[in-house]
Length: 461
Image 1 (cartoon, rainbow, N blue to C red):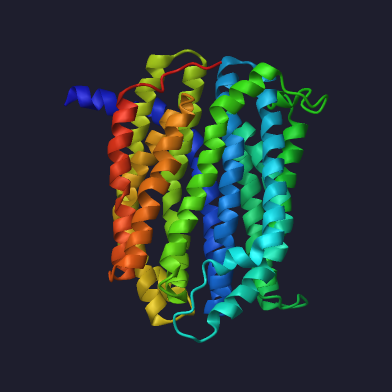
Image 2: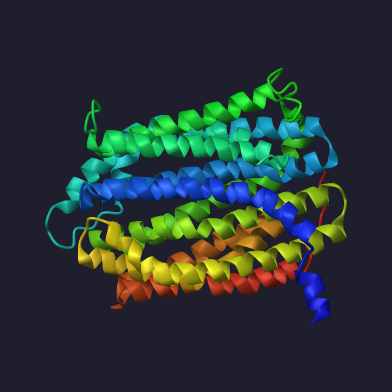
């Protein structure tokens, strides 16, 4: 027992350091997801078709967001190690790579959404009742997408700066910027969706406009702070004096980071494909999954951000060459993450059924959403472990392994299970949702053996 305690339970100082990084990130994402939840409710007051159209576009933008995270993360695995080593010039080159990569992804996404938006949205619309609701949902989806395109550039630039700032251990500033942005988003949502006071009633267009304005506010705060505090952000020294990245650094980032970038895109595309499989069961399922996802994301932030902190702390240890310390910290952080998520999952299971009642929609959709939430709560602790395993492997640069572990698994296992069950069985949609979510148990087993093998204990810089 004493041996297990020593391996998996840390000291007070250890948890203080971990939580000092994690809590601002958790709070930041909690506020962001809370506003997304409120935004979802406000759009839901307009009608099921409006809510469904916006939800589908947000699925598409989710793929873009993950592509941006992948582009930034490709350099972040080096950035955390460069900072741990005290190599500020190397950290600067990783920042340049992020900026170039995220802007390139943004240009590609804007071109695709502008030229193929209607076809992409239509993939998620199946009219099972003959009511014509899908055409109405498509119309609102296109209106929402047209405005959201203008928010992609500030999002990309903000992620380039914010991830570098977090690698230095300064998670408070991105959190504060996010607080201001989401507060602005919430207020503008209310004013512009419903036309309060002198503001016009814009409906789904108002929801999109509020989000875009909030993204410019957030990016402005982060960029301004970074450039006015260069002693804390030494990677900005010379960042814009020249545009090049040394061949050795560029090659290293591409070799290690390209699988990570591709992984994020393919994983996000896989998840949207799974949702597309669900959508063939009708627009009520689209609405139910949207409500459940909005609420589930609110609870999932705990394990998502605890996992992200693993890559920062373990990456710093690895960069400094402290391999045993990295291994010890990783064991304790994984155990802590799973423990926290057992508690969070229990709360979500108990409280989750009440959230759908807030929405102005049909009883069928509310019931579906409540069942989806219950299933997600049961699977959450397993997701926590596999997520922590993913970030452990990534911190040591095992990006090809994470590519197999994440996106290849999604496309080889999760997507086929969803497709076959949705198209070729008579199972109800809740049962299909459960079996698809339960594939996470396979990832838990794979992740356990990969982390235990210590293949990730590598100093790369």
